[in-house]
Image (tube, rainbow, N blue to C red):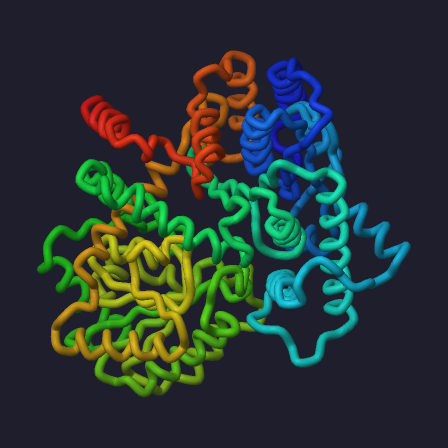
Length: 541
């Protein structure tokens, strides 16, 4: 954890947290493991709060994992202070704080690079690959890997062995983590799933959002198994109540037009303000003229992902994002009946040092029906006016665009990909078929948006931003930031807010006892209570 605010304010937080959590009885039995391998205090506090709620449910003690290494520090952290993490964890009632990277260093010094025994070779290789791509900010692995790359693979094997030993010794009731990808986080998750330990993934956004995978709900990769669980929850618990939820979903969609999503588009001009088809058509014509494409042709907008961001974390039909972009561009080059607008990810500079997107653009520069540009080059008004179909691997656009009537084709899974929001390809052949079919429909003036996709997308937006966003009087909202205001607000809450009746504790209990895949603000298992809660909140507003 890096230094935030001044030291005096941090000391006040430690004092308030110690007072708040200090009267819990000692629990010598099982434990809940909370990850603190991040420098952002908001991330760590969320993990600790949720882990403490599970500790109370399971009569467990709290064990916190922390630490870092040179490569993660070089890429992500500007001042990771393990000592501050330890003091914060202990103030939140941790019975033990373990520096996992220190254990890894000792293992490598004592035993060298030895094989990892518990994890499957395929799972280990996938996490090693994703980590190497991210740490080196490259779109794909080189054919020949030098000693530094091989050493990282050795460290991953040591991390896996350390996690296996820790989980065998601790027998935890749960793992609470802010990340499920890359070696230092993903290998802990893999160990937990393999050893039948519930995994709770706390999200870095909103009030408090978390998703969970319980034993018996799958043995594959966390994100892939969770996608299926979320789809079942959506179809069984949300979709049947769509008439009740619909007014709230429309409000969320309206707010999303102007207040959300700038992180995936980039830039500051983020509102979608067009009200009529005439306005959209006029702006579309201006945009097509500006970028040199035919305004009378449908436009397929291809959203590139950050090329080294958690590659292979969920089900994907291409080996990596670079391969997907290259082959999609080749398909587009041969399909001249529509325009193709390729947009780079706004955070690509932090994920790619090779200029991959620019190299693909240069290869197709002579194609008049293809345009390549940074995503920030278009306002949201321009982007949504020009786009008839969205194409991507995963990410927020695959849900947001359908919510506003623009169909999306995906070459991989997002967490909502089983909810009927977009067209999700299961194989490469299926992907090319979906593209070809969509081209044929839009050339004829039809849309490939299916009847329920818009409504389902809006319901998912509502679930993510309302139904599954749980507020606690203890926890400041994510958007408050991680500076001195955050520390002061959290300190005041822990001095003056009692835990009785905290909605977070009720939500955690409901998720835990029902083995649901997410925290929820409402009781979806009780239709009468759900109807009353939604009607009451709507009347109050």
